[in-house]
Image (cartoon, rainbow, N blue to C red; front, side):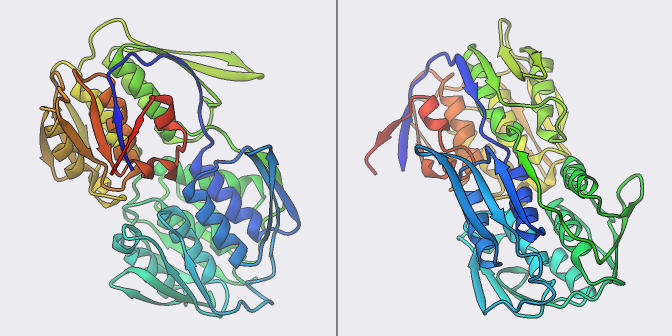
Length: 435
């Protein structure tokens, strides 16, 4: 899909879609739980649809709850016994573009003895899982893969033991934390973590273990975990909070265009690390104000002064790099986005892609192995056609940037925005063009 976006000031009230990270964790946990769970107001996107498909293949019974055409929840009958008593048929599961689903489902599949094959789209087949597969091997789980990439076949059972798991992405560790409590009683999983990026997402996963009363031990810096087997996930009823990763894009649109936007559905107390984006905007010159209380919060972003550059450590929040880079393109001076080498192993090498596509708008960038320096200026956009590279965050970042350019910008591969934020391009009045 090819779209054109014209310059304009972006203002209004926007309800932020639900968190993908929370939605996928809740889906997997409910599918493994004893009894029927209810997930309210989840994210309805391509990635979560992939996770629903995988959970159904694992034996969960999932019924949608809709209000007209709007998905407002799922009722999920968990298949809590599959990893011990119920043999799965031979499965070949397609996770689409969802890396979160792939990594977490790999570990879950290792709990039982039947082989399960995972594949996905072109991007997924380039994203490595070798550290996770090595750790699973140390726990007794067999795997076959294409040099650590999908297609990947997993076969348990899970025997436990002590393994080392470097985590350039936190999803490797979250996968073991979700699966290991379900190993047989008497089994102990010990995990040494010599490298951990994206620490807030581990805090998110641990919040679910704590809420379900699942025992574990961890060092204060999360460099070591001990999880005994024999636990069970419990059925639950819970709503999904708004997604700070998605909220970054309408916020960026307002910051770039000088608009005034109010975001609804976010919880300032949530563990999501990407709320750091709003601290960044404040330091760059935006007015960022929370309001509300128990009945709901709102977050207002506006700007009355020029944006200014700065230095920002994105180690905990690599998904912010595309949105941060386009805001930096409109700032005075240089903006350094640092300590974020793992942004190169997302759906695309986002450091290289952002540098290359910003150049089309007349913005010079300096690539570093672990980051990007954006030399701010006045992005033009004249006759610019941005390649979205099939990456939802790249597409949404340049859609926001287009609002502040001197002329319209076209973006190819724009359909990928639906991976996490199906309605975002409509918010910006994007015009569909013939291919």
